[in-house]
Structure formats: structure tokens, C-alpha cells
Amino acid sequence: MSKIGVLGAGTWGCALAILLAGNGHDVTIWTKIEKEAQALKEDRNNIKNLPGAVLPPQIDITLDLEQLCRDKDIIVMSVASPFIRQTSKEASPFIKKDQIIVNVSKGIEDGTLYTLSEIIKDEIPQADVAVLSGPSHAEEVSRLVPTTVVVGAETVETASFIQDLFMNEVFRVYTSPDIIGIELGGSLKNVIALSAGILDGLGYGDNTKAALITRGIAEISRLGIAMGGKLETFAGLSGIGDLFVTCNSKHSRNWNAGYLIGKGRSMEEAMKEVNQVVEGVNSAKAALALSKKFNVEMPIVEQINEVLFGGKSPSDAVNDLLLRDKRKEYKTLTWD
Image (cartoon, rainbow, N blue to C red; front, top):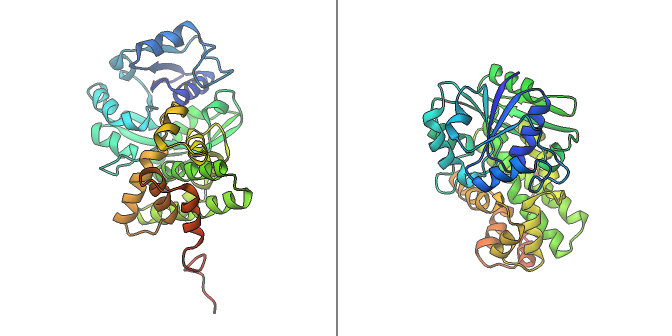
């Protein structure tokens, strides 16, 4: 049995806590919101946005950040991306040297353009930071629906240790050394998922969405490889796997926000109605900045930024994508 601390009592934090407790581990969840802690303690059958899930009685809930961080085998970072830096900064004094921290959140920091593991490492340099990602909606993981993910770490020893803690008969975990590729796939797919929701809101069909997903992973891969990620990662669970599930599921807050925008809501109205952090909005700006920094062509990312922040109509954005200059599908493929 391992001692595990989960930073963040949102849907994903609670779902993973349920999974880890089911694997026989000693699990504590931290939240800084007193009402949230009280609600979880009083009614473990009523977890916000996790219908049908039950938080086992052996899972402890705490408001004490030091208690959460002390003497843990691993710490799971499951805080929404806008709050990763502040939470990491507050936790850092209580984190021991070589503490394994598994980041399970997704996003890119506006301004610095850091991935979330880079933010954690920036604030907690003494930690051994890993990432876990893949097609894994919290709603299904909490109900023990069969799921497969990948964990990325700096060493095979850390990756294997995390794999053993999480893996069971319904939650299969692969390992990889490609931390940057895993994080970029998980972050940038939210931008494409926003676009997919917009297409569904506009009433387009399967052909249109298939084109978006395919060309979306092409854009993500181009940028990811330019930043040091590996092509195999973008063809895998944290790339096309996560992109596919997020673009096609009503569990996805990013898809839902995009759908509302396609139906005529503004970006602000859509985010308010979804009433959860829509990671793809911040990641869209960061993705555009990264595309310019690394000189990578990302037309879908450009158009979603125009829709979100430039007042462009979604239908005009689709038309502009379709009417771009003719080109090969892949420049690397040539005739003899």
C-alpha cells in the first residue's frame, strides 16, 4: 500500500482518488475550498459532475496543504491549469527532495508558454515530475469503465512505479519517456475539441469532423515535433486517442463550450454556461504563440483564435479553411 496525496477535488482528482483507493492505496484529497471539502465529507454519493460515483469512506479529505504533501509516495497534481503555478508555489515548502509528482491536468501557461509540468518544475525544482494523460473522461473512470492512458517520466524507474500504482483490470497504463509530446497532445487537443464543438453547433456532419480531427492531429504533430516531441506519441493515446474522444464526447467541457459558440453564444457566454474551466480557450492563445515562435503552420489554431478573440463568425472561419491555397497532404511524400 502506498500513501498518495491528490491536489484538487475536482472531477478528475476525485475519479483518480476512487481508482487509487480501489487499488488498495491510502489516499488523501486536498482542496482549499472549505464548502467543497464539507460537501465531500457529508455526502460521498454526490460528487459534483460525477453522477453515480461514490467516494469510498477510507479516502480522507483535508484543507491542510502541509498534511497533504508530507510523507507521500506520490502526489497527484489535479488542479485546473490556471491555478497550477500558485498551488505549486504554496506546496513547494512541504515537498521533499525527489518527491514524485504526477501531473494529470492539461494546458499551457499564457505568457511563459510553459507546459504544466514545466510550471511545477519551475516552482518545485526538488520534485521528480511526471505526467499522465490519454483518452480518459473522469465520468467513466469513476465508474470503472475500461480506460487506457500513458505515463511519461524522466526515468523508467519513476514511470514503472507510477504504472504499478495506477494500473488494474480496468485501467491500463503504458509508459513513455516523451513528457513534452504527451503534454502537448493533451493540451492542444482541447483547442481542436473546441473547434469540433463549433462544427457540431453549426450542424455540419461526420465528413467535416473527420477532416478537422485528421488535420488537427497534423497541426499538433508538426508543433510537437518542432518542440522536441516524438511522432509516435502523437499517433498514440495522448495524441490521436485523446483528440478523438474529446472531439466526440458530450462529457468534454471544451466540446460543450464550442457547441454553444456554434449555436451563437459568445465565448464568454459559453464558458459561463459550461461552468467549468475550459482549458482550450487559454491553450488556443498559447498554441498560436507557439506556432509563431517555432514557425509552424497551424491554420485551424489561427481560425479558432479569430473566432474566440477576434469576433470572426464560425461559418466564415470554416469557409476560410476550405478555401486555402491548394497543397499536398504531406510535403514529405513525393512522386518518383
